[in-house]
Image (cartoon, rainbow, N blue to C red):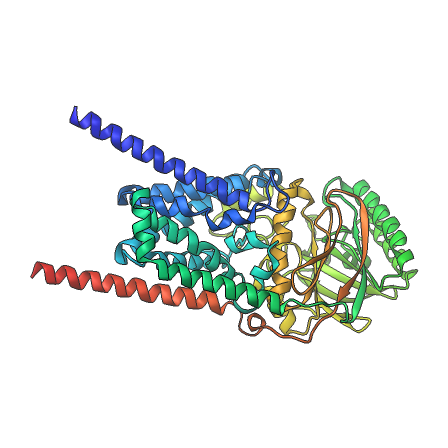
Length: 540
């Protein structure tokens, strides 16, 4: 009877804890753009992780790892549901990766609470920032879901990103969850007792928020007096890789017609999206390996030769792999490497090229061909298009304006836009194809992240996309103009060219994340050392 009662109590407790984790997953997803809200319910971010911290404190050590795996998988399955459109494997792979991250993070969060019973929530917040930063690094780097990005619409609050990057915003967002999770770990009855003993902490946090908001209101400014760059952004509403040559011809016709309409408003440049024109312009100009594709390339070049403004567009930039061999080898394969590239044409001639430097894992890049040949074959069988990695951080220049062009999800990595700005870019121009997702949530999440790149560097950011979100964003992250998604249309607007202020983030990058990790490691080591010393003393 006692065993049965104990089992029932344990089952009830585990069920309650799993439900709390599920609640946190839902709140986290709703804080970002989702099927329920175009921009997301941002205030939810401040309490979304409270259930996680409660479970971390109350669960036993034997459950903490499976709980972490459960939370990571469910959270990113809900948050990134749109990955199912990309490929069925994607919605399995990404949540599995995050299940692995969280099964490592949860024990650290619990350890922080054990080592520092009173102020462990501060170490937990630092550990969360460390996790957010480290998961953006390496082959699997994926910044979607960094909690600070959920506040993209609250402009005064996120201006601190110009100093700390998104990490400072994330810390201010995660602290209330860590605090409340600690306060509620012993139930509602102990909450007031906890608050009374930590009321100074609450006042300090409130003061930081007020200072942050004051800073935000002070630094935000009017850019109407800055030089203006008039751009035409063309959104042709098609996944350009689908449909073969007929689709490429149809898409080019749409791009051309929309561009001619936009030119009536006299822009200084016309910008198409990522891989808007698919047949490799340079390859088919140099090597006539496909007559039909060469004809389409020739049509494009004839059109560009008639234009009086520069054209910027994404393209598959094929180059010879081995210059000592012919373009087509004896076995019929191509002696070719491909880059996801941006081309600038001016006066009908190619002026500059940027080749993507940060490739999407699995779909654009898989460096483990030799060590994981089975996975590589599966990826090839699913028609993933692998690219070569570019090496130069190109700064384009036309009409006296200097700009750089992160491609696709390159604008979700702060270090890239920072490198471009430090190389001389006055405007950031992102060319993206998110049309594959068929999801407004996906496109809005991407837009929300890109807003931070403008703030971090105090540079305007332009987004030209296949199907959304095509936008002009000022240096304070305000969306000045925005096209409706999933429509074939164009946007002509003025982009402030602002270079009067440099930022701490542009100068020093992710220093705040590094500092959080260093302090966190120091506290963990100190706490563990202190615990060992106490244990030894108690034994003696």
